[in-house]
Every structure is written in C-alpha cells, then in structure tokens.
Image 1 (spheres, rainbow, N blue to C red):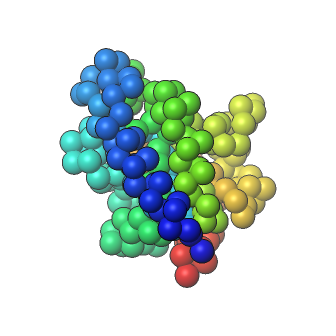
Image 2: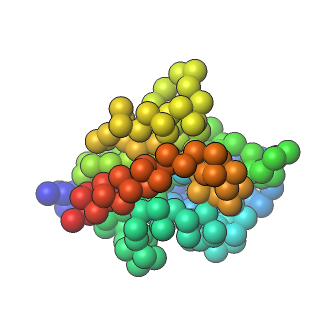
Length: 197
C-alpha cells in the first residue's frame, strides 16, 4: 500500500522534473521533459528519449514506435497512459537532437540528476521494460553483450526486467532477422497482464 506521504512528495518531484532546464543549452528544440509516473505504478517503461513528435505533443510514446509498443504489450492507449499503473520514464526526458543515423543518445544529465529520486518514488514496480541499448546498459550493466544478445537472454532478467529492442519502424529489419522475438512479445503480453491485474 502506497503511503499518502509518498504521494505528496511525488507530486512536487514530477513538477520539478517537468520544469528542469539543466541541459537546455545543448538541446536543439529546448527543454520539454516528457515523462509520467505515480507511486502506485506497477510497471515501469524505460525508453531512450522523446522524438520530435513526442517533444511537440508532450505525450510519451505518441508516435508509430508507441503504437507498436502498445501492440507488443497488448494494451490500448487509455490503459497505457494510466499513470496509476504504468510509469513512463525514459533515460533522457527531452529530445536530444538528430544524429547520423537517427536521434542522438539520451542526455546523461537526466539519469544523474533524477533517476534515484524517481526510483525511490516508485515502490510498487514489479516489472521494468528496458527498451533499447541505453536503458539496458544503465540497468543491466556495461557488459559486452549486444542488444540482440540481451534480448535473446530475456529469461535471465525476469521477473524484474524485460529487455526489448526499440519498437521503431527503423527496426523492421531487426525484427525480420530475429523471428524468435515473437516468443518475447507473447511473454511480454503475459507479464504485463500479470503485473497490471
């Protein structure tokens, strides 16, 4: 049972994070932290960083990647955006800019400044989805495994973590090359249903 004092602490924390301007000078579109959580959440979704569409709307996973992620999870939009059940906290909270092959990596300042405080505010998390290499390296360690190797070893990380590739349309080739990922998606749906039931 989540204590009321924790709920009262969480609201100012979320407001403080949403007002953060720590690395704004390095952000091409300025600061606009996009995340959502409550201390009642049971499932934590950790992605990379918002893209331009998410930055513009302020709604996490509000793009084709989010559509695919919700499909993998077996959730509709209202269920996915229910912060009393699902916390959405990417590695970087603001759009980091464009790189040579996609967006730049998440800014490291977010994790250093906020991650521990957020984790303290999420005592009920039963499963964390680690989407992409940056989330996996932060939570699972800086080992020599590739993203494909980590995702292929998904059983080793349950019940606490489930590593996933990014659901971006850019990863369609990866999905075609790794048909075994269908079993991971099935397990993901089962784990999400278990945690949220």
